[in-house]
Length: 51
Image 1 (spheres, helix red, strand yellow):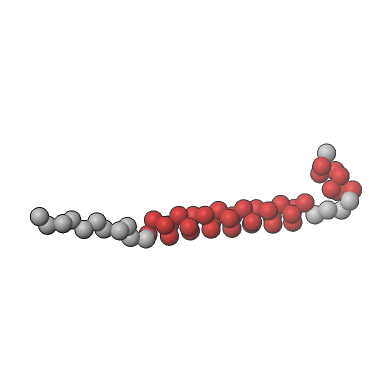
Image 2: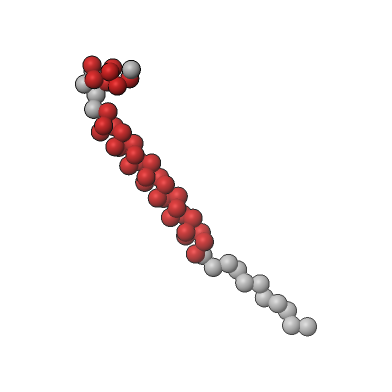
C-alpha cells in the first residue's frame, strides 16, 4: 500500500532505503569502534605492598 502511494507521488523509495541503510551501518560501525577502543585501553595495575 505504501509502495503504491509512493509511486503516485513519485517518491524514490530505493534512494531513501539506501540512505537509511548507510546511516544504520555508520552508527553500528561507530559503536563497534568505541567498544574496541575501550577494550584496548590498559587497565590500572594495582601495586602490591611488600611487607
